[in-house]
Length: 177
Ligand SMILES: [Zn+2]
Image (cartoon, rainbow, N blue to C red; front, side):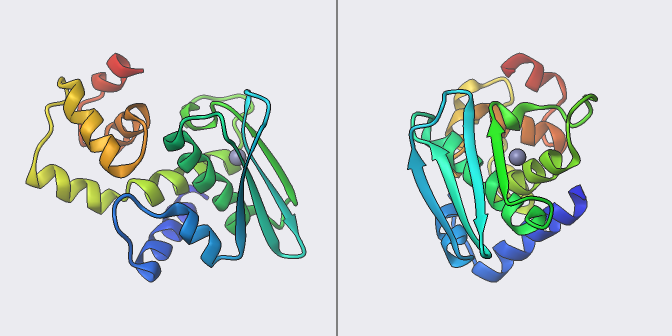
């Protein structure tokens, strides 16, 4: 399921062509999905409603813009991959920091949606290329932040991503987390 989600994200990036930061809202719009920023309970990152094949993503407008981008990508994954299972998804935060190895209540769909969002916003090939051009010092907070800002993601999301891809050593995420 995770594999499928990552492939779906790559396919979209390939079809759209893309710049960094990836225009996640443009991608959603191109797929008949409307994004609405709204006041939501602080514990809710985002919701997806599917009506007659049309998707509406509600994003918590009080969350940081980078976090909103991740939420939009996550909800888009539910729309593209899971709408046959349900027409309503409510994601409580922090959805994206759940460890994929942790057990208990972590649904496969959520793991898949996070994998999709990570690949969409921080494409593996793009990250590898940038790190080849300009290696980052994993100990240097600023270099992580700079790279995160370029991709429009939080430093924490980027660190988790780099660790999972094996592009920085494991202990780094423990430091930032
Ligand atoms: Zn979700």
